[in-house]
Structure formats: C-alpha cells, structure tokens
Length: 465
Picture 1 (cartoon, rainbow, N blue to C red):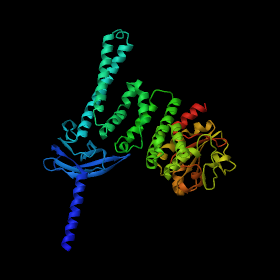
Picture 2 (picture 1 turned 90 degrees about the vertical axis):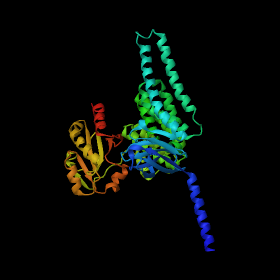
Picture 3 (picture 1 turned 60 degrees about the vertical axis):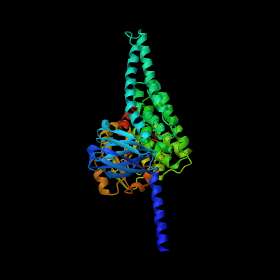
Picture 4 (picture 1 turned 135 degrees about the horizontal axis):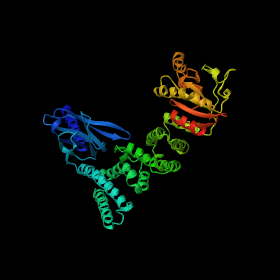
C-alpha cells in the first residue's frame, strides 16, 4: 500500500511538472562577450517593473531564462552593465544571438515570430521617420520659397515618395497577425515615439494624434504590460501643451482628454487611482493648475470608485481650497515670531492682519524644498510688502528649537504649534505636502495657489504694478 501511494504521488508530481513545463516558455541564446556574467529578465506592470528570472551565462556566453504565460507584454533582458534588450513576451520561445546587449547592431532574433517582427520594425520605423522629416522639410521649401515653388515636378516627386514611405510602414503593420500582441503594441509605440516629430515637423497631424491618444483605453491590460503607460500619459499631455494653441485653448483640450480617459477608468478602481495619481503629479509639475484642478474635481465629484486615502486628500485640496473659496481664519494660539511687524497691538488670528493680500506658506525646516523656497521669499519680502502683500509662514516643525533655528532668519511672521500634520491649521487648509502656498485677499478669499516663488513673484509684478 505504501509503495502504491508513493507511486501515485510521484505520478501526480510528474504530471504537475509536465503541465508547468508546457505552460512555461524560454528565452535562450548566446551573448559571446558576456561569458560567465549574469543576466536577468524583467517585465512591466503599470508604472512599475517586476523580476521574472535571472541566470549566469556559461563560458561560451550561452544562457536560458524561463517565463510563464502570465508574464506577457513587454519584457527586457538586463546585463550587469545595465544595458537592456527588449522582447515581446507572448508565450513563444525566443532565441537571441550576438555579442552583448550594449552592441545592439550585433544582436539578432533567431526565433520567435512576434519578436522577429518587433526587432524588424524597431530598426526600420525610425529610419522611415527620419526620411519623412527630411522630405517634409524639402516639401516646405518647394512650397514657400519663390525660387523653387514654380517647380511642379520635384513637388510631385516629394509627395509621391512621402506617400510611399507611409504606405510601407502601414503595410508592415497590416501584415501582422491581428490577434498578436505585437500588432497592438507597435502602433501604440509609434503613436508615442512620433509625438515630438509631429509637433515639430508634421503639425498637420497634431489633431489626429491627439484623437488617437484619446481613443486609447487606459485600462487595457496590454497597455499596462507594455512599458508605454508612462510615455502614453506624458506624450499625450506634452503634445496638448505644445500644440501651438493659446493657453486657454490648451486647457480646454486637456479637459476633453481627461474626460476621454475617465470614461473607462471610472470602472477600474486600481487603474483609476494609479493613473490619476501620476497624471495629477505631472500636471502640477508642469504648473498646469487649471487642468490639475479639473482632474481633481472630476475624480472627486463624478467617480464612484474608492479613491486611495492619500490621493483623495491631495485631490480634496482642490475642492476645499479652490480659487474663490474663503479660507479658514488661523488662530495663533502657540509660538509666533515677528508678530510686531504686522500688528503692534497684538496678534491673535490671521484676520487681524491689515493688508490687501496675505501669502500663507506651509513648510518645515526638515523639508528640503522649503530650505530653497523660503529664503527666496525672504529676499522678495520687502518688495512684496511695499505692494501691500504680507507673508505668514506656518511651520510643521515638531520642536521649538527646530522652528526657531529655521524661521528666525525670516523677516515675516512665522507660527508653529508643533503638531505637524495633526495641526488644526494644516487640516483646515488641506495641506498634504510642503511647501504649500495660498494667496488670500483681505477677506481671506483664495486668489491664487502658487506652485513656486517664481510664479508668485510673477503674479506680483503683473497684478500689483
């Protein structure tokens, strides 16, 4: 009985292993200059990557790496010198031969139908784009320069060659198997990689390119596994920002793009949080505040999905502290520095300050960015004060010594209650990071949410002439 049961167990294990082997694929080959070195295989998942396998090459540079069918999309081989070689993970065995990953001209994909197509297009498409840009430049010369514009034959020849190159590229993509991953991936990669060229040389294609970005499904798992998610978001909004239209029109276009992205994202909680978080940060970094405010309000007001608490707090700042809202009065119940410069008869709250405008700045001595921005404000303080703009610094430091060491250098009012993120002021102003600034008028109406001292100073120069 014992032997019989043991035999059954061994049989079950053998069956399990055979199934696993069937479901596993391999990437193998030879990299002759990487003998006895290590190599690893990683793949993309959203904005992040994850490891799949690693191995050491033998003395001849031979290697073999295993991946499973769950590892699909774009992957990459990485050698010790941090050089990467991209591969399509689609369930096929792949064979690669060459000298090393750094010498890409020596690398050849010997096996793997989709990967052979991928390598071929990756080599040919950039050359076609360069040729198109060159022909486009010549076309403009023959259209606009009176010396050449009368020459019809060259103009016809240029147009014919441009159409041939475009058709050659399209025919390659149409020739791919419709259900293959590479047939989806390559057009999206072309969309992303051509953005700068289109913005500079082929401006007539800008609107069609923006439409293509809006038609992307940002919940598509193929996009999540492509390594193109970050580039798709950034290229989309970079093109909107650099499309040559007025700033007001750019913001209208960005709102349309946000609306298009949200149609499917609102049905996928995980991807909604991840992409909204990234896009919001991108818009903030580029000082596109109208667009970031629109995104924040769109997500908070119209989305039924659960928003991650940190992201929700960040977005809530725009709903609670948007331009035109009345900011809470600040009670000065703890330590104040330089109170006498704004009110010689005593200062108990923000509303006691008699000034046309007040810039409220949240920061801390432990904040690296604050150590750069606050001294800039100090340098501009006298200029601003002459134009009836007062500054109030709210510190998030937790120790009196730290507060004094940092804030005592500044010529403006500084306040600290040593409660950091638990401070009532911090909560009432929905502060989630430092530095954060709010420009208020005499009625505490929010006039501006500056993202930098430079932006604040530009507002002073423009509005308080």
